[in-house]
Image 1 (spheres, rainbow, N blue to C red):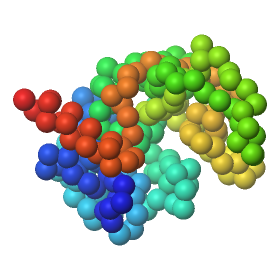
Image 2: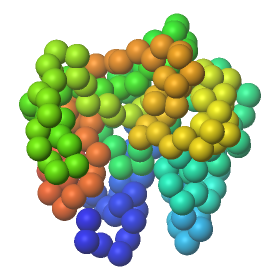
Image 3: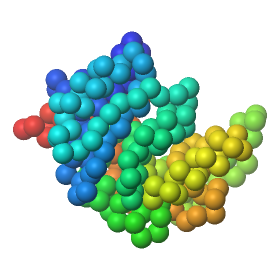
Length: 214
């Protein structure tokens, strides 16, 4: 992003991206707890945002993350209360639709795990180490995975603990659950649930916020 401030704490129309993201989950039926993993430097900032956004009826806390995403999530999982479902979400996806969140929860309650995603719209190439194309897989069964990713608590805990024991690092939470041989269902979302990563993403997000406020 070419900015010193971490992405979740950049602002869109006067509010941090983290605040915009958190608000998408507040209408979720049965929401019991919100945890934010962040750097030690931003613990106080994250705590202030949680105090402002999360209602008193919902438990909330922030914690120091780890060296990698997987470490941060495991640190958070160890502080999760007694709940049925755990939702893992990127702090910089502020446009997740509440209806899609609800659908992921419904599917996860049914099968154990569900992730939000969209069908791949670009042609995907598999290459070798010299970047020579080896294969062009059919897009029919290729999806781009987003978050939230929702799992029964005991399932995601087992997946993380086994990954740690075996020294496995996955690219997302679902990949850890898949290693257990447990099914995970894909729920179709939409392209608006993008991850703010580059300066152009930030500009697009600002335009979306401004349009929503009209």
